[in-house]
Image 1 (cartoon, one colour):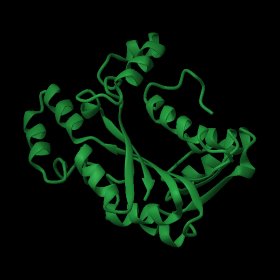
Image 2 (image 1 turned 135 degrees about the vertical axis):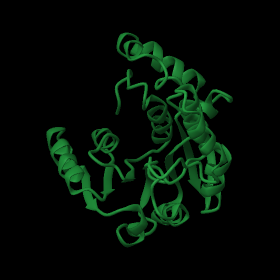
Image 3 (image 1 turned 30 degrees about the horizontal axis):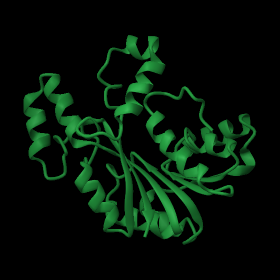
Image 4 (image 1 turned 90 degrees about the vertical axis):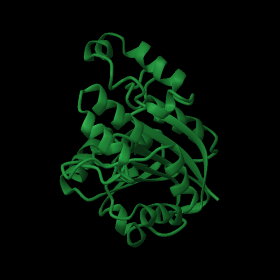
Length: 240
């Protein structure tokens, strides 16, 4: 699927997905909501799984189609233009084994509606891979950068949003992300931190020691308090 030396930015997510997929005894039907140009879809298709990518950008889907063709997996990837809010009208209910929803719940109008739609697409026992922006990481990044007023605003905001220029509508922590998924019919089985230090170390470290950086991320990804200050949180949740 992915090489053994994946990017430190995504290694944790791939590790969790590989373990889940390895437990299945058949090729999976996967759905990647907001999957863009296929960073996850194409490797999944290479591994023999059928993947539908739903994304609002026609340019991203065109790039996905080209990428799939170049990888020789065009027949296993379906591109559908749309967004998470309209998922119920795009994907038949109970038709998917694995759904990916990465970096979407921070920007949609109604996260509860989207997560409920994710659950509806899954077969009983199906799994969702969800990645969300972490409020604590955003607060620390602003504070370390000397933007104390902006950091304080993120702390005080009920949704973990900054000022009007903030491109995200909300951010999460372990409790709020878990509550959202649990309230929509999921049981959260695993929570890991994504990019615990990858976004903090100098770029030269990432370039010169990618394997060491990846190993560090993987070693600490499931361990509080390191997990809880990661740039993103990855939740693996099973349809109840």
